Image 1: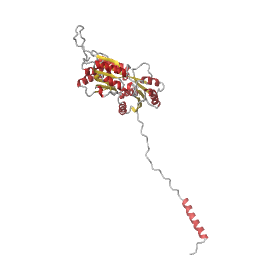
Image 2: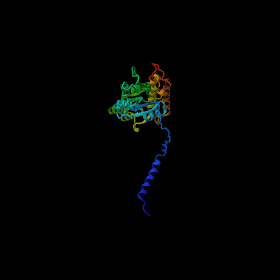
Image 3: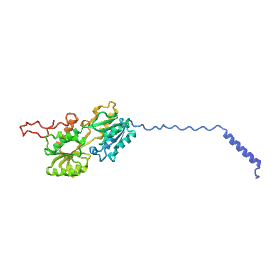
Image 4: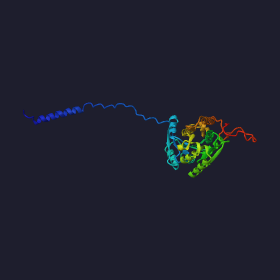
Amino acid sequence: MPAPGRGSVVRALIAALLVLLVGCTGEPAPTPTPTPTADETADPAPSGVQVAVIVPAASDPAAASFLDAERQLARLEADRVGDVASVRVIVPDDPDFVPDLAALVADGGADLVCVLGSSGRRTVTALAERFPATRFCALAAPRENLPDNVDLFDVAYEELGHVLGVAADAAGAGGSVGVVLGDDDDPRARRRAGLRAALAGGEVSVDTIVRDPSEATELARTTDEEPLATVVVDVADAGLATVVAASASSWIGPRGVTVDASAGSAVVRWWLRADVIVGAAVDRLVQTDRPDELSRLGFEQEVFALTFGEGTNDAVRAVTDVAADEFARGVRDPLEPRAAEPADEDDEDAATGPGTTD
């Protein structure tokens, strides 16, 4: 078969080119229409205030007054949906870090900053002017001329001391009672005042302050000679608290202090509820009238938590619960002495011992 001539090849190429040109000049293909997709919307931001709480450092004496604060404050966040968006709990490594931490969270946008340690009042009043849009709170007796964005909450320590005194009197069953403080700061002094009122008419063999091991050793020597039935241990240091607790058959103290099991039986232990304190601060923030009655926290507001030792008998539990309930109902004065009916001055045999309630 003869090979195609050059002219045939050229004609074939021209025909192919015409086909391509016709195809390119046809109707354009329609532009694809994108498939509609559902709008992606971000989750709504939680409503309520952003709260930051700086709890006491382990070396702060105030730490003995708190127990499991982080768990309590997590519950506050869950219970106050709408009022509280979040609660951030900060445990400082050292009390000296507290002012800087409080400034950091305030600068980070916290609506409410609560400082629960010993330096709370000093810290929040110093930061109030620097962060006028932030509300601050601390534990201290209210004062005049406070900055508008500072709330101080006065814990009714006299009530707590009185109830502990009732428990100590009942647990001692007429024996001698000791009262030992770790310092003479305001909370301890006020607890002691209520406690002494509850023990009025009873024998208080020891009423002292133990700040160091030498003082604890001297107390141990004294009580070896004159044993105590019950001792109220208001000491933050665990080692000193153990020595003090061992000076009596039974003891009463804060739950935040670990006392060695060899020290004897615990009658009742106590702590402050961080969720109640911070919850009161939230109330002051979200209520524009900022009612003054929210500034004092006692048994009525359930700021104190009590737990009895396993060996505490029903009689001690009953009188302790009654005293706490009377404070909750506002029918008892924590500084009014508990005493029997007044005795005739000429009658030395008249009943003057403790145990008779108001």
